[in-house]
Length: 282
Length: 269
Image (cartoon, chains in turn purple, red):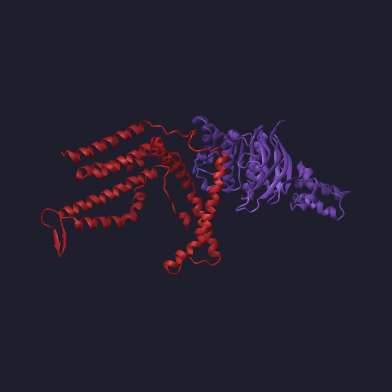
């Protein structure tokens, strides 16, 4: 498998206002994301998750080191459009990402910017709306839709540009449980069926548990990196950077402190129940 | 409360008027307004009125919604009528003469013409916004004004701004509602006190509203950049505006209307 995104010795700090010292986010960050993989990035507030995401499509440029996307250097201004059409970004608030007041017009915005021919845009828009399950709403006004539906439209707007990689920056933070489920199902489907590389920045452990790989960030550094099972079983480490494992792991961890010997890699409720059952029976 | 406000009311439909190209409708509206101001006798008013009535009839817009739209204009209509009746000086004997007030026959006719003109002007404009979605209207304007691009008028940018403004009106209204509720929950009073007090009470609403609008604008700009927006250059359109048979028919009717009214005015019958 080839590399979709590679971050080499990334350094970045936000400039200070009026001669005040800036805030250093990264000093030396290294990271690679494989093509077609689904990576979740976790971390408490201010650890640099969103700043990292903005480096993936040249919204922010590295102060030191390099970020490569599909082999292109993000600081190369001539490749800017090429990079942005390959790495789509979805942000937290769907309201602030929707441009037009008709669903299909909004989805068409990306391809229109890329200069795709009219009839081709039509087919891209229809296909993108079908993939997120919003085709029947194509002529609606986004104002009247639910948060989850709006966020699926912003995802459709990104898919219509046919990117290789989608970066989602806390896409479910403003949604209710139903909307979160809709968005996560859409993202998982895109990753599995279309082979689109997904980088999901999130606060929700259960969402991260769906990924193939979890990266935990703390103070601009990578604190843990591995499969969800491997990362979440390091409960003490997660607690030390003010994060928590999924509830099932937290339960097993708490019971272990009371003398049980339960495995810490049971992420689903069923697995956890089975482990408890086995342990009590033995 | 604020959610009930509807702006740029659009009644979706499939009537021949709805299906006209937005450019045709815009041009026809201009032609219609010109004829309305050229018309100066009963016959030409009758012709323009027949054109309007025909357009309303085939648009399937209920007459009631058009009349409802007139309500705020009743005052303007009455004012125009009164001014014209009292201040027009005719040639013959005044019909009524009380103290300094003299009412002439010409005054009454002129007042009727003026009131008709205003009513027909408003109705025609309503018909456009009722049968054309805001986005089609913006597209139409952009396309009609595109020759101005040669003079470095930022036509695309203006159209984009209009489109985004229309998109954010409901969002910002909702936001205002939320801020007002939040202020009320903390004891703010918007309904009592003198006019000055009420205006002052709006400040705590406007400040957070503006801050939030700027934040939204910033996020939207980033999101648009992420979707490769770089201005109008090299941009294509999903829905290309294309003239159909109906548009040519509409244009022909428009030309006939203009010709008829001009002939009646300058050459008489």
